[in-house]
Amino acid sequence: MTANTGAASARGRGTAGRTTAPGATDRDTDVVIAGAGPTGLVLALDLARRGVRALLLERARGLFPGSRGKGLQPRTQEVLDDLGVLPGVLAAGTSYPRMLAWEGTERRGEWDMIERSEPTEQVPYANTLLIPQSRTQELLYARLTELGGAVRFGAELTGLAQDEDGVAVELSGGETITAACLVGADGGRSTVRRALGIRMTGETVDPRPMLVADVRIAAGAVTDRDHWHVWRAPDGGVALCPLPGGDGLFQLAATFEDEAATVDTTPEGVRTLLTTRTPLSAEEITAVPWASDYRARAALADRYREGRVFLAGDAAHVHSPAGGQGLNTGVQDAYNLGWKLAQVLLHGAPAELLDSYEAERRPVAAEVLGLSTRLHRATADGAATQRGKDVQQLGLGYRDSALAVDTRPETPEDTVRAGDRAPDGPYGEGRLFDLFRGPHFTLLTVGATDAPPSLPPSVRTAALPPYAPYGPGVFLIRPDGYVGWAGTHADATLDTYLTAVGLTPAGRTRAEVTAA
Image (cartoon, rainbow, N blue to C red; front, side, top):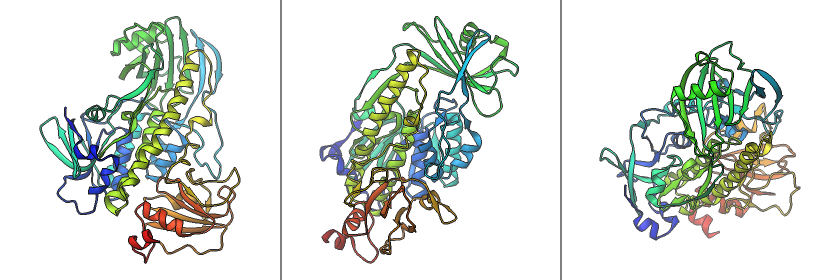
């Protein structure tokens, strides 16, 4: 493995933007993405719809086969809505069942692990959706291919080198691929991160080993498909969550009290564990399609970028599975990075725009890591901790970002500010999310009489009557659904903001706006 950051590293993090002008045809592609998990697939999909050439590499021969990250939070559902994937996801998923505690064959009580909410005008997707990670990836992959993208399976990244002109990616077969940028979305043991020498700082959340597996259970067994079944035993607990699909598949999660325990992930080992700790017989466990063991850890990459190379998803942060945060945080990393790469690579945005990726996403990951660690430890201590709105990721935002500019003198506490998620609401015969859907920016005028300024075609304009969640004003909605700029009216600060993200008001040159 090699990693040569060269001049890009020496000159600091702003280097990537210097060589991103359109027309760099000597490169094999614009962006190489390592890892075709949810994070890599979302990034490739987002870049494809923006016209950015991207090559998605996956060292495995196919997509990940297991259910591991089975919960899609409301904010992630909004992302998938924008990407055109949500209808298939909703059809393939279901709501989380109630928990059911057992003692042998005796029922000992039910409860909801996840707080349930009703959809509202502002939050159309109010609850966590249960869907196996493998099915989510299949739907993302199908959408990617619809847009002309592809995954190169069996392609393992073994090294990289970069300079001011680009990144050279080395593959195991000896091939070298050149690109403007590289994104490591290759998991917690990221080859890209290790090649860059970026440390992960963190802690062991729980030293005890755990097992997660997919098991198929015969109809008529004690495990009905209306509950998430839980047994506790002296040597560890077992939870069996029914997975949607009607084929008898459950996700098994098992804990071990002995820190030195050896976890047997073979089908025979999984069957033995279940028959030992539950009333299930070996004959009722008809298949074990996938199994893995792990120890819960929380860690955060010391930085998300080195020159032209970026980290996303588990390559940048690893979580306990408690609260269902890991996959969702990775998807939103990709959603944040995709539009910024496109603006720099295709539309001449300043290089500094790419600095905002780490500035915005790393603090979010730190907050989410803390949440998932607290939930894991509370559950491990025997508390029936309910997951509330704090796991939904709807309240995460970027108010402290350089890309959050709010020029209004004051706003009520309950109205949207720059850096906040732009809420849904009625718009004509549809919804604001219909207006926002797509790779464009949106300039939204709410309860104001000023006509919207003349803007480039990549900015969609719309006017709303007074709508309380926003309050009166003008709002520039970023392509990832966050308010970038807000003011009482469109003024020169909006022009400056547009230039910073690679846009120019119609009829004015970039130099004129900058001079103003």
